[in-house]
Length: 462
Image (cartoon, rainbow, N blue to C red; front, top):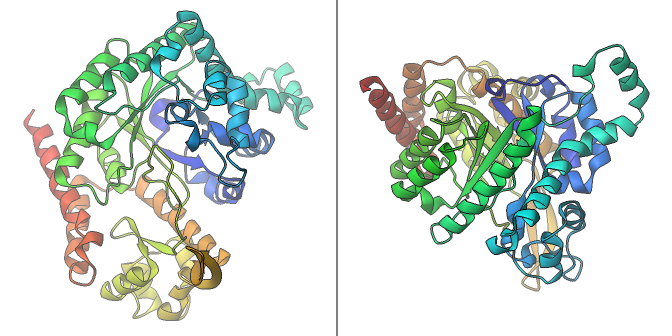
């Protein structure tokens, strides 16, 4: 694949499971720019991913997930295999080698001193990079299309036969205020080691910056983070703020988030690995010009905790375009009624959503048709040892909701809204729906509008 310009990596989608593939292929393949693959997924199903990427011919890169080994072995164990390490993680351990292999065998968490030796650090970085750079390409070269790609290579079409990642991500570890200095020092050493090796061949190296949310409330740490990375900056920063939910963040948190991006972007462009509409708006409207990309998963993944937590009971949610967030079905229904979208098909499409999925679903009676996005089925489960009946979205419901979400995100990323129009749309959504929904589902519009307006004014005053 040709080397993609960083500014063209705007809309990124994270590959989650094999079931995600159908939402990455036609007709959705034209709605996003690149794919992010978690290393454990690649280790678990490399052949399937190689085939998918051959079909898509999309830019991609791999999140090496090296932070997983600093949290303790209990987070690496399968919940259904008597404490054994998950097979996907075991495969990753075999790729990364030492000191990871020994630490996991001992059921100990990785600590910075385990990589204190320059030789150990060099070999570890080399293994992490090799897994990213070679896995897909080697599978493609040996797969069923190998002869075809060999033929293209002989004919000189070299740019079309490379299935190497568009970025190489240096090993990285999670930063909290309590452990900030020691892990930051190791992050920088890993980055500089990879840059020294990969830079020789012109490979773009990314620094993944993963921080606890409380780091945002410490301006000194934000400045130190940017200053230290700025001494020898990467090609791009990949930002991940632990469990940062834009719809729930207050003014102070959002301002600190913008300050962090602003300070990092002095040195290199920034891609938010887990972001929602607030980040998209900052990018599309040019409020933070060097925020060049935002990523999400299918229907979810606009935020993610660093340390895994239980998934809970699946709930049917509908992405409401006016609020730019997913609502539980019953609240979405109430909001659509308040917006006047249940009066007629044309009202629904003009006042709520006219994406491809909504046009296909809302065809005759909006009030009845809309239940397509909320149908559930009952399942008997054990909760605390007692039988309980719970409602789960049907596979058809999930399918409709994912398709609707993907079309909505495409529209957001390709919007040509000027800042003034953006602020007006947020104000209208807040005015129309407050009082009809709990403010927890509505008030982000007012907060987003306020902090964006203030940042625009501050930019203009410079």
